Structures are given as structure tokens and as C-alpha cells.
Length: 162
Image 1 (cartoon, rainbow, N blue to C red):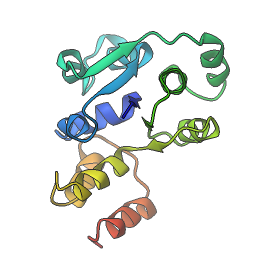
Image 2 (cartoon, rainbow, N blue to C red; image 1 turned 180 degrees about the horizontal axis):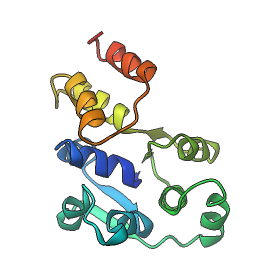
Image 3 (cartoon, rainbow, N blue to C red; image 1 turned 120 degrees about the horizontal axis):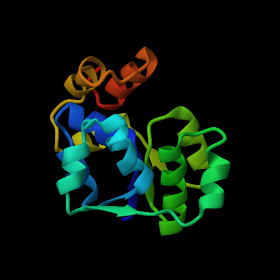
């Protein structure tokens, strides 16, 4: 399975100490250079930066279709644009992406998308975590992840934790 990740799933799962779920669920990840740049933005070491730096199962790529990246950047940041372009170049089976506009753009290009909440749901379904709720709470509290109440409730319902 070919899985491309944007920055948000990497940083948010690292912030709540669940980064290893990505390796356990997907075995390998592919990221665009812009994602690596975002993990190092403003001279900071954002959550997930160190994990990505040492993860032999995460592969970085320079995106070839810069015309597509430029077109996508009308509505998206560079990381999202390059993640979508890379997913198309690699024929990805799945794109890990949280931002609403990025998800819409990826879906318009025929890509299957899942965000950090879906990753946690898949981890529970696979028996990798016992409950979703503590991780959703940590996303809000520790990572500052914006999670609407309706999505929070829906996730708990899907996880049979409501």
C-alpha cells in the first residue's frame, strides 16, 4: 500500500506520543520535501521532526509536477499541495491529510483521504489502541488540534465509545 502523508498527521500524532501508529498501520510512508520543510519551519523542531528524521520507513521525495503544485497553492499551503501532487505521482492508495480544503482538493483529484481521527479509529479497529477518546482529548489538549464537537461525538460513536 502506498501512503503519502502531509505534515499535520505527523505532528499531531507525535505530539500525543502515538507516532508509531503510522508505522504499525501503514509500514511505510512517503512525504514531499515541503512536508520536511514544514517540520523544520522557523528554525524549530516541530513535533514529529525528530521521528521523521530517524524513521527508515519514511521516504522523502522532490515533487516533479511543479505546475500542479503551483495550481494547488492557489487554495492550499505548499505542504498540502506537494502532498497531493506526490500522491498522484506515486499512484498512492491513501493520503493522510487533515485540513478541510486539502482534503477536498485531494478528493477532487480522485485520491482517498484519511485524517488523524480516522487513523485513530483504524488503530482501534486493528487492536493497536484500546480507546479513541483519550487520544482525541490529547489531540485537543496537548496538540491544540481543532476538533469540532460534532466530529468528536461522531468519532466516539464510530468507536462504540459514546
